[in-house]
Length: 404
Image (cartoon, rainbow, N blue to C red; front, side, top):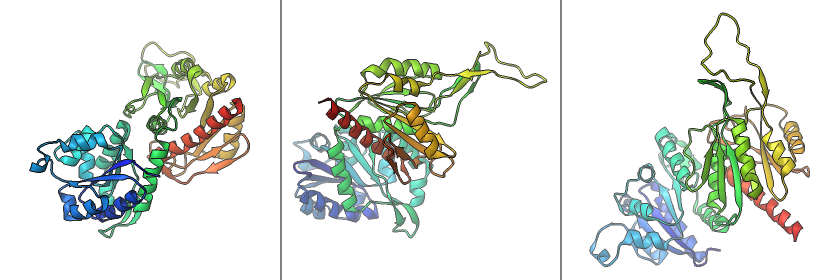
């Protein structure tokens, strides 16, 4: 499946480096051309000779050396690779890449890379959960780097939790899926909405909700990675917009309505992950409302129902909605799907741990008009995003087949 694919493996100084030998061997057996770059620390755990023998290519460690006089290794390898996988990736290399530091061969090579880069963190559970490390991973995702989530279990230090490098067969499977999906949405235009809208009460106050935009941003980044032209219509969010995605910033539901409707006719799919306010104040005060002695009454009126309008107007497009519920999940999700003429709805119970707003994971169920439903286990929102896009691609293909 990997015949003639050029994969560069970056190896950092962690105990999981021993797994790299098996990974390189398996990639070679699948037909890949494999090149290996090691940090100096990695050579303390496994020798370059071992990986050179398994890859059947010289292993690069040093930035400078007599053997490199006639060529520039970080440029040559960066241009040659179709995919770079850093496994194991230490907190150190993750921090370097996230902050643009290039002080050894591997970090410099990544800076010069024109191919996609996948990072497989492997470290102590407390290091992995450190907010600095998590912020660096989040930043790398926003830049378009792929993060291969670590496995959970007993670590070399004796601690238990996330931080294990996935086993080589799992890494090979991830690489195979990467090449399979690399351009499966090429030529498609996908519109994604994200974040929670804000409805002004006065110049300093507004009505909003708990949405952070994480799910919508993950979908936009995943669609970009799979070759789609992506438009992200984003309400307020503290997240960095994904690189390579056209991002349109809006604030209110009415602004989002206007933006979405303007792009909709030319889109192949719309994934409405935004949490849009159902109501807005009938009239926003022109000046800050001062505190008075009695209660404050704010009259609300309905906002336009963007998803309903899209459902009425859709022709060839695939329309995906979201339902964030606190009870009666299936009943409300199916009702919303039917009322709004959706091709699919993604529903989650936001009261469940690991499925609410502002967290990195989600627990969702897909519902389809024919009565089918598909429950997914808890997983990273980046993984959920790809599962959603898998379904969107299948629906697009089915619609296209009917028109032939």
